[in-house]
Length: 179
Image 1: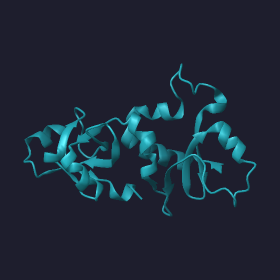
Image 2: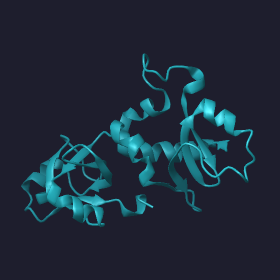
Image 3: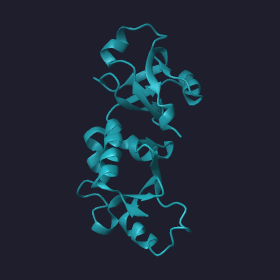
Image 4: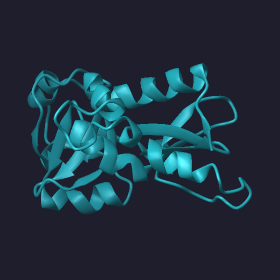
């Protein structure tokens, strides 16, 4: 495992900021007074192969004693870098990103199955959404009991979605993100 290069860090943080906004600071440096304030236990991002992992610094330091060929995974896999240098978020990052999401969409129970099977979220399935979501913003999709289901991108702003018919697409499912 190695640290991210400057270009990798910019690419990773740009993708994470698309979903979290300014709350990305809470992923890097937890707020003062939390249990993670110790410098050895601060969360870090590390790369193994082309995959990025999110883990505590103390665990990353312990992993240096394991040969790279024997180390399969460590921490939570956030995503991977493609051969072209782009970053793709994996669904395993949902538990990390969901508490810090800037924009959220809650879907009704009748919309959960179509979404989970790869469909987009239509207006009729939306129970509620965060206020003032701009067009083409990254959102985290929740069910009515606040369980995160996946990622998406808004088709239109919330003001425009309110005026549309019930069969209009409100959120595009980020299929390429959920590898």
